[in-house]
Amino acid sequence: MGFEIRPATPDDAPAACGVLRRSITECCTDDHQNRPEILDAWLGNKTPQTVAGWLSAPSNHTVVAEQDGEVVGVALVTQAGKLSLCYVLPEVLHRGVGKALLGAAEAQARAWGVSVLRLHGTASVRDFYARNGYVSAGRDKSCFGLECDLFWKKLNPDPAASPAQRKGFCNCSGQ
Image (cartoon, rainbow, N blue to C red; front, side):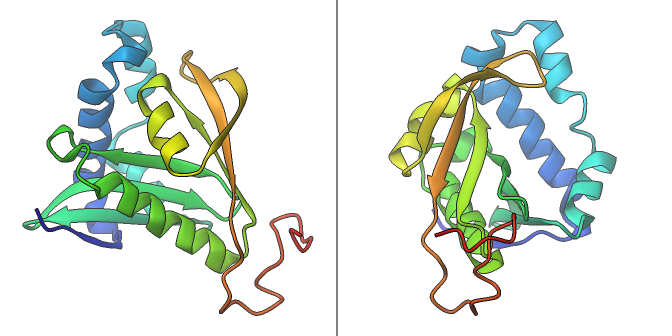
């Protein structure tokens, strides 16, 4: 199974939206339990138009995983140090695609000088983030009414970044 991680383009919005919707619907059933009120809230902003806006926002960096010309995964990191998206299609789950997407998002965060990456993770992804070095800082409710873990990971600075680039989002050195 070969796949490529590449920066997302605006043309990827419909396919990336499809990945988000299928992954949430099919891979996160332990979280939404097929309850329409939760699923509808979670999917409510997952439209091609909204995703296109996320892809074009200058403070976001989005990557996609592509296999045989098809987008099979998507990840988005913000300059504020938040991993907002990391989703894969059910058929590539547990095949390294999510880990590769996460690695690309972390690399971009390091390049921006982000020293700590944060995210909300549901029960379906708790083990994935723990295996990849994220620590749970406790439980919280997400905006979709789901109980989530607040995860964080300290990122080592990018050795190629200049001292100015290694500043944290708060304009501190992140040390």
